[in-house]
Image (cartoon, rainbow, N blue to C red; front, side, top):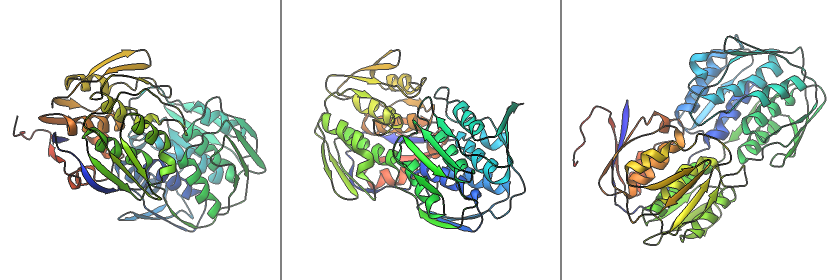
Length: 424
């Protein structure tokens, strides 16, 4: 098992190119099984979750090839409608094949999902929506089974906005007979990107990016080519790293409109932010100011940036309050930041962060994907050496993170967990 070793204290300066969005690539790849013909997807990040989705599509019978950041998928015929536990347990986004399988092939058997340990993320909204579309749903022995001769359009109201639920239902409704309306739909950019790809293939979808989606079902989808949008969470992570190290970092090939909530908080914290068409530059003062953050569904502040912002606030002047409203149990990085000298108090779903002038390097353990990023940001700014264990979480969602940070001036490397660390 690998670890990331960081010698902190260097200001990060320079440019970093943002990769394609993992959370857009995954549903787009899953949706390729909705129709035949060759689908060519570019700007696909080479991260573990994407490779897992490729393996899953291959198990189902699709032809999948990866070359760099380009994926080519053909799914004229599949020979299995089962997503097995061994794959789904490593990546909860595997549940995204549920809607496409039952919509096109009339049945699906998908293991109940696993993934990051950041609280309950039930699939009940997915299942209730598919039942509204006419699927027969059962759960036995840890598997969801869905069957339908052909799905029928319906009006679906989501009790809470759910990203993967909206994506699953939108994909299923694309091949349903009649019109489907999804109310209180999630509005994240990744949903819009999926809708744009489906529309290229012949789907009839209106309202992507709003809370009401209208889908007129068609008989089949055709081939299609698509470029995945840039990863707004990776973008925010590098901006936070630049700000925390008192640096001057420019991210390129990004969509600033997807980052507005993050940019606003960086400005509130005292950073200078310059925005161009596909570039954002952040320049930080010697010490940031504390600011309050509340996570919300898009266009609010993303929960996937909460750990990075908490790290940022541990060295800001004054007291910050960070409120998590999207997921419970997403504060497992707090104890690890305390090991580095952070002053953080947990009050229910809120963190009260009293900023300190500095942190000190320490061995820490990542609990999930975004916690990994938060600990790395803290390590970049801390004095001394920080070792981040269990970085397989990090590999699920960040492409070449050590290489990109080294290019900005960081002293960071990957080692085997048993390897000795020098300079301790």
